[in-house]
Length: 423
Image 1 (cartoon, one colour):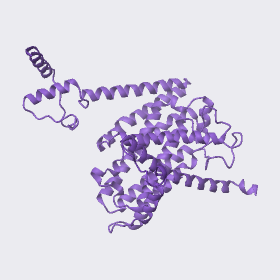
Image 2 (tube, rainbow, N blue to C red; image 1 turned 90 degrees about the vertical axis):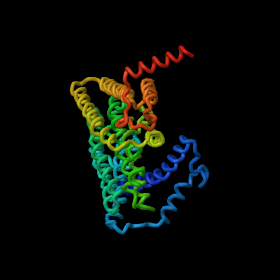
Image 3 (cartoon, one colour; image 1 turned 180 degrees about the vertical axis):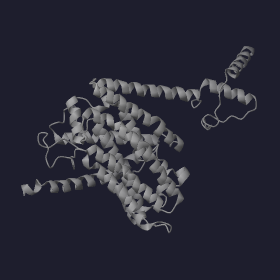
Image 4 (cartoon, rainbow, N blue to C red; image 1 turned 120 degrees about the vertical axis):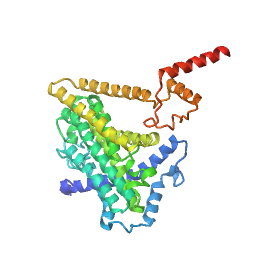
């Protein structure tokens, strides 16, 4: 009996089943948590009727989806239309197979029942390659729906993937240079050996990975493939019931995967500065807390940031993030090759982030995208001349920019001073 349990194939099947069930359960309750958290941020109550605190709401939603009418459009390519959501779910589940959830059960030594489905020496390469296949489910679903809005949404998703996949891979290259391995377990061990989390050595890579990861899973503010103001529901327009819920399932599981990869590569994975090294159960708890932190960030961004314009999305991917990712790779390569300490790499990344934030703030003021005193004075001058001026919250700065002139500002100030003296 014990020999049967020590079989690698049996252990892999059991662990795969447990991980799949855990991910499906997590997907259901992350939707509930997201609805409650967003409601709290917006001053609402959120779902609270199905069970205490609404804990049975995911069950009610699942039953509703199961009995909802399944409609197949007459113009659809039926076989591909039905298979596309399944592709997205399978790809999302497969990417999680190489992520170490906790430490080894027996004195840190590898075993068949370690909390990881498969420890392969190219684990990170597996995640990048499998996650890049997720776009096929969306593109095929949008194309096979026979709807132009669906096709446009799927093409947007493909364009986003091409734009941000390169940045995402380059953002992780710095971690590989410091850890000297593609194994996810090896990367965690490297952080333990160096006594740091790689976010300290790669702050710029961490920020780039987060932005690219959010865009990769089509989450707000990068959810352009399903923009309801422009494309009805994008690639989801012709899907309903369980098929629609499969796409939602893939999106939330991809959120968990992106959060798990960020926790493993930049926050030490299951480790917490050696505290959980000999206690596997506690190490799993630390890992789950780190993943929950990133999932909360996803929800927070959705409740806070508006959807950006598509041209700005492409501009951000190709002209901002990609050059920064290349800069980070070059700087990290030089530092690692010359044997310079890791903290130099960390300081370099922090300086680059600070310079970018300063530039963005300064640029927004110069271009009139922030309400400034100079803009206020120029607007008053325009109104005195009988010109119509849109409020700064409505005016598109790119097309209806008000350029303040020093002469107009000085003239307005002089008039205001004269009126004050008379008063």
